[in-house]
Length: 63
Length: 402
Ligand code: HEM
Ligand code: SF4
Image (cartoon, each protein chain N blue to C red):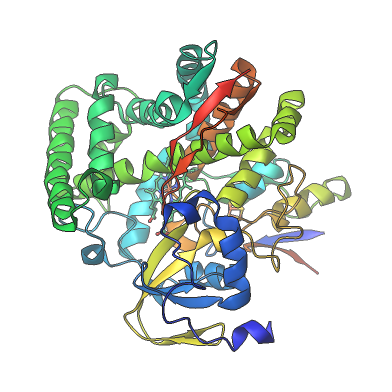
């Protein structure tokens, strides 16, 4: 599973890296960075949790 | 939603209720639900414009800063002489300032402060945890955020009372001066004192810098190769004062009042403190201490079937959005195990609360320390909490301890 983030939309709420710290991390301003672009199967659930809690809908799965 | 979409805006109030009354502030949840059903976009006298209540509408309005502008300083009368930065300005200017401010309030930066905050919370709690009763607002909810704020800014703790006077004179002027004209002059006069206070603080800190002080950072940081002017510095710090104290005080009051009235829910957190971070999010959703946020339309638009003219005040009802059952499964229940919680208690879009990471940490630490120091508490028998509207500060929160 691959993740895509839209940095124009991310506003640094930090829900993703708070709830899914193995998949997302924060940059110096508190905006999202991907640790894994392709999420290993064992982290898929965590990735989904981060994605589904983003209030800005800045995270998506591709294919 | 066809039934609701065809409803005409109510010409008097949002569904016949005044959201800006103390009664509504005490228990707004029922009113929000009625608003969703009766008029998702209503006309309100107390807000002086249109009131938007559905989650999807509120989120989209937050995200469309070109249509829903924040530039309305003159409408607000908060004692300011210029728009506050960055809340009352629009991109691209607003974005320039956020670029230098975000890192000072990032989660990473806030984590460093955790031990200081925890000690400040514990110190206050120790002053009353062994009493039989306490008025929690005055004893904790008011001083805690103010102490944290002073540390963060690098200002002396002795300025606590002065700070509280400043923000009450601006945000609660009508309680101090019921006469509208006198209240206006109180805000104007206090505004001048706030500018003068920070002006002096900046002079002092340029001479003798404090370590880790956000004000010192602001004095040295460059924006497009230039240092900030004194007016820019003052327009940022004026906002810090108004945005960073009452909001957290209100949240603490709302949270503790809820737990005082719901002993089972309180016990669940005492038994398993690992639930606290989720509980903070759920209580932010349920209580939404900052009920709404203002905007002004840049052109005519249509929201949920209602036409809103150009240049009209609009109130984005974060509290109502946070109870919308189209977004939140089982939204009427407070659940510590809620999996998806995209609440808008900190707003959204480019103006997303700059202090959200600080606020979350303060609230988490507050609950952890509170439940450790005084795990049992309830409302004092025969007494009622008193809420103020807009920012839902629980101005009187009488607790029985034990
Ligand atoms: C639980 C406590 C808090 C709540 C519920 C809250 C809520 C909000 C909301 C809803 C907004 C959006 C306003 C808008 O879109 O016009 C906002 C903006 C803001 N908040 Fe907070 N806030 C809290 C704590 C804080 C703290 C502790 C600070 C510290 C300085 C702070 C600083 C700001 C600033 C500077 C803005 C303006 C951001 C911008 O316009 O770019 N807030 N807050
Ligand atoms: S939750 Fe969404 S807006 Fe917040 S940091 Fe993550 S991607 Fe960005």
